[in-house]
Image (cartoon, rainbow over all chains, first blue to last red; front, side, top):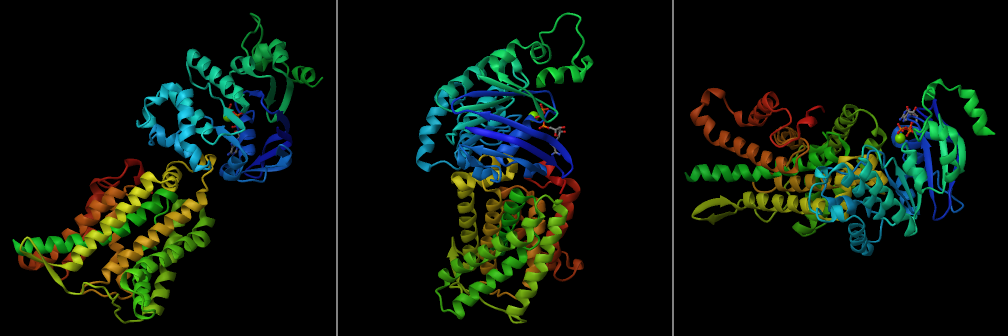
Length: 261
Length: 298
Ligand SMILES: Nc1ncnc2c1ncn2[C@@H]1O[C@H](COP(=O)(O)OP(=O)(O)OP(=O)(O)O)[C@@H](O)[C@H]1O
Ligand SMILES: [Mg+2]
């Protein structure tokens, strides 16, 4: 189980971005982390994967554990070695590398003997990119690039996979495909922490969901309950009553009170 | 005709040593975005260590060459670790200034070690010549070309085919993403300096062969690697190779023909030719013949 407890993160020594976040991803589950722009979702993932340093960020409080072992002091390569894989926001594939090279770099920490087998496995999971192994990745479509980014993360055979907005900028049909692939990956035994703004998609496959707002978890419920929650429907699923005010118009304290109760 | 061919071959010989230095620059630049002005000092120390291993330790020439390459690889990696690593995240300009400091320090060390003498490296070529299609050429020029191109090819294949080479290229493209794949980016920085150090040592050895010999001040000659990387593009290994050869040949042809055809330019005009080419390139194509346009913002 991946567990975050009371996490506080500061950028540039002064900008407090996470204010005591706690969440957990039980073995074998899909957990959704939802929130608006700037809520701190990506920051949570950076904290888990040892990438805060790159952004002049620091963990100032709290712990992150994987199966009870503290991992928040580990650097990025060491985190990868513990079995945490990630698909970064915006895909971040190496556009100048071939598809094959993109996957191989994902296996940097893996056993040399496992690379070819994992390549085959990824290509059979993502037939769309299998035919383009020697092509430069920059020429792939957005959906194919997202699949490549996910495939790259799978090359290290992670036990926990962190996905940062995999649906970003993709057409509804492709989002469906990506969603099904996440389920498939999960069924093969990988736990998933799914960061999304597309709450619809995330809550349809997650067992549990957290809602992050300006650095705090304001809701923490089974996904089924979140799907039924009036506020979530309104603000994150876009299913609001005709004539209702916008997100900003709702009195903040009112929502908070409800969420904390 | 024979004189022309001999001049071109001499130019290709010296040019391939420039290419070695240029490739070292490019590898460090791509991995770390630092322009390494210390490269010529690494070269001169490489020549010194080759000579030291041959004459003081009695090692066979080839063993001494490899040992000098390993020595300079270590010195390169150590330099990166103590002088450049703390500069990570600082502007590239500041890091480049640090390498100027490193250049001066290593140069002073070289002056101490070498003194004012000219050292030779105990090479098997000396002033031997050989016949190629009826043309008498110096063996040393052929050795320079072949050895440099083999070394650069090995580096190229390593980068292209090996797991660590892939990790180095990934680091060059996007450090954060490389980190996220588990690449130890700091180690890749060190490795790029090690490779540059080894190539510089090889260049130093080659410049010290033949009729040459090396003095501590030869380091300044190696500053010609700057025109080479400007012409070739800071981020292109291939560019460095072509540019090194072009500049070597331009220099050699100038030395052969300028005194006869343009005596008005005075003696030793060939020395400034690489820099003239550099200025010209900077005016018309600041990212070099083979470089990527964005790279011009150093
Ligand atoms: N390197 C940084 N330095 C300073 N502030 C930062 C830095 N990175 C992020 N922030 C700030 O931290 C907050 C959270 O950012 P983060 O990227 O984690 O949000 P997010 O939930 O992932 O948003 P999005 O949905 O837009 O990706 C934002 O206010 C952002 O401006
Ligand atoms: Mg984000």
